[in-house]
Length: 376
Ligand SMILES: Cc1ncc(COP(=O)(O)O)c(C=O)c1O
Image (tube, rainbow, N blue to C red; front, side, top):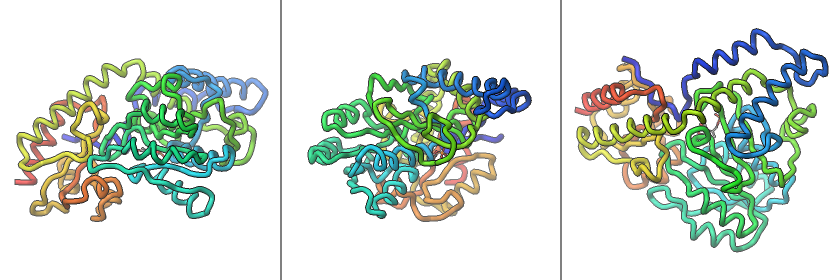
């Protein structure tokens, strides 16, 4: 049996998405900037995709800027808020994805922005009282906090953060890479300035995503060149990726509650089975709190055992793919920045299981059985 439980890293591409991409690859080669019919035809694919995507997050198509994925979109939000929007300070947390954390540190080291880190507790809750204290100093601020943590699944109370940012006139960038197309997101209901999408997290292709930029703000490009993407990102558009992204989003939104219910059942089943069969197992962050964590992610902590350093490798030999809690998935023993923040007191073995609509209860039972065998 082969079981893929590393869907927070990337998801298998959906057959409908492959079909949509292949059709465009085979039939449409024009440059979307060309004014002749070949170009116009390809341009129509891009603009139809943009309209489709905008509808799902309740924004205007002109607020979507296609990028090479989540990392570029995060970089673009942070950098342009300094270059174009007069931002003097970024407030972020110590458990953000490196696409945000390393970008904020880089901008800070260059002396371009002040950096404040909001407190989190041992479960990874963002301290909203501290956030408000920081915001009350009334500096021109960008708050950058992720919607769901990719390692432990913690969900941010996005409405509360959005309200605080509005109250203190701060800009709000939310890294929604793990939640877009998994949870409903409405940018009119919870106003924010930037949000981020990466297609490969919901059965779309790699190397494509977008940045939502609220129409109240104007930004200049990070990548200079032609006037594509309304002068916000130069370079001939990745048409196949954009079509794949839009198709993946369409499927995800049309079946979201169905997928949600199925995947949540898998997660609940796994929590129960692990609790019943692995002594002293615990869960990192808010991972096992169903209402406060993303239903696709479960991060577990297991007391060390014989050969526990080889756990991921041994699971792989049984055909099981999942992630560890180390900084580098190729076997480094240094804990990741997220796990070391929420798991300060112990040096347990950390494994992240992350699910998708293609997983089954039988697969979960197989994984728990093999895990138990390796520990015994
Ligand atoms: C929360 C988060 N932000 C950003 C990224 C980067 O996205 P991409 O792989 O599209 O560059 C990831 C990818 O793992 C992520 O999980």
